[in-house]
Structures are given as structure tokens and as C-alpha cells.
Image 1 (cartoon, rainbow, N blue to C red):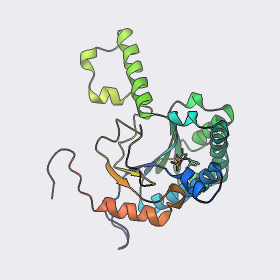
Image 2: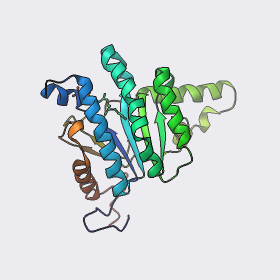
Image 3: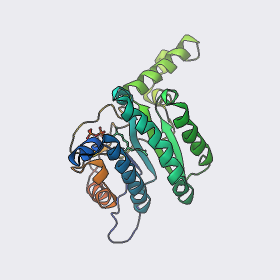
Image 4: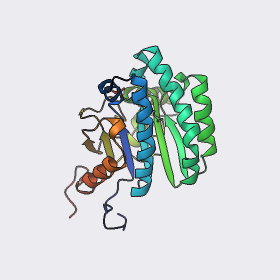
Length: 244
Ligand code: FPP
């Protein structure tokens, strides 16, 4: 809980995860290429980073590219792979100004070298910041992450370093892509679709879910503020009873 101006909700999620859906539909409605929709979507990323900072959200995780997205037409995949480094070069100053550490989760080795280059450079340049974190899910899939975690545990068991009976939920969580991150408190999905689509399957167990009707390129600071108001009105129980 934070004290803030009267128009800012008092209960603020520490970690917000977002499925940025609807870029393609936004472009289609305007007779534009899908890539134009992603470019406008990148503007929403900038707006939501600002909104998150203003509301006191400390961690923002964005589903930028899923393992399933590799099956899209090559032109769209290439466009997205070029958009990310362009976005990072244009906006990395914001990360420095706001003390934001950039991180990435997913099968990052799948990304083309030029995408990885700027991504890893900006991650290294912002590594020391502790105030805020921007986490990009890239070539990410929840089932892939869980599978990778199982493989890591199995390797330890095989090497005789781990007793299977000693595996607890915390042991498992320790093998996820960013094990130090707290679970998201709030998950937003845009475009009216009400699905999780293989996003953070383990980490979203107790998250509050919010489905916004706007397509992602139309989801800006005002829509983010509305989502924050909705979160402030939610009562979280984590399987227990309400505390007050
Ligand atoms: C889903 O919309 C969106 C994506 C697959 C890509 C998300 C990428 C961005 C928002 C831009 C770049 C991101 C960063 C971090 C700079 P969709 O294409 O599935 O839309 P549709 O369901 O309407 O077809």
C-alpha cells in the first residue's frame, strides 16, 4: 500500500504482467500491414512503461513474442525481430532515467543475432538498477519454461545432486527463467480475448486477471490507469479468507 495523490489508487500491484493482444486487428481495421500494428503497439509499450512508473508499479512483464509466434509469416517475424532493437535504441534513455533494469525471459538463443545484440547490451547496461524492472518475454512459452525447469531438475537428480523426494514447489520455482522475480499480482490482457495463452503458467497461479476491451495499440496511459483502479478494488485471498 502506498500513500499517493487522491486520484491515484492506494493498492498498487507490485508486479504487472501483460498480454499485448490485438496489434494485427488494429492494423486490419485501418487497411494497414500487421507490422504497422506492431509499431503502434510499441508506442503503447512506451505509454504503459510511463503509466506503470507513475502508479508505482515496480515490475512490468510484457509478452512480446511467444514460442508459437515463430509460425507467423516470415515478413511479420522479421519485422518484429527488427522492431525490438529499434525500440530499445530509441527508448533506452527512459530505462536509465527511471532506474529500470531490462531483463528477458524465454528461449533467448532462438532470437536472431542482431536482436540479441541490442537486447543483451541494454540488459548489461541497466543491470545495476534496482528501482524498477522491465521484463520482456521473448520466444517465451509457459510450457517450454516448465519443460526447461523439469529438464534442469532431472539433470541434477541424474548427477546425484538432488533427491527427488526433496523437490518442493520452491525447488521447482528456482529453475524458472527468472527465479528471483516475485509472481505477478495482476495480469492484463487486451483485445477482449479471455485466455492466458501459455503465459507464465506457474507464476500466474494467484494473479488477479483483467481483460481490457481495447486493442493493444489503443491501450495507453488512460486505459492503464483504469486497470489500476480495477486492481485497487479487488480483494485477494490466496486461498484463505478475506483479511478485512
Ligand atoms: C499480439 O497481437 C502481439 C504480438 C504478437 C507482438 C507484440 C509486440 C509488440 C507490442 C511490439 C513490440 C514490443 C516491444 C517490447 C517493443 P496480434 O498480432 O496477435 O494481434 P491480433 O490477435 O489482432 O492478430
